[in-house]
Image 1 (cartoon, rainbow, N blue to C red):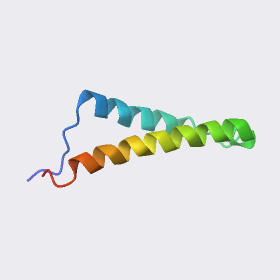
Image 2 (image 1 turned 60 degrees about the horizontal axis):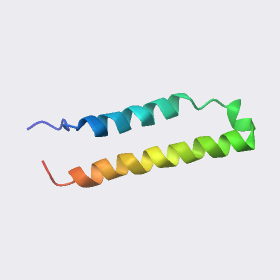
Image 3 (image 1 turned 180 degrees about the vertical axis):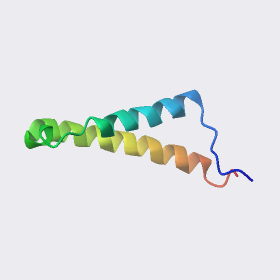
Length: 61
């Protein structure tokens, strides 16, 4: 049995957006409150999308 999850193109895109968002986090950019708030919002959005993928896949193995 394989633990590999087959993702749709949309789901793979959402995972890639989450990866890119995480790579854009830079401690110097977080010093500015507005930029930090924007990045936190992007992280929250990406996390919600990833959780939705997992929730829809839960129990489908």
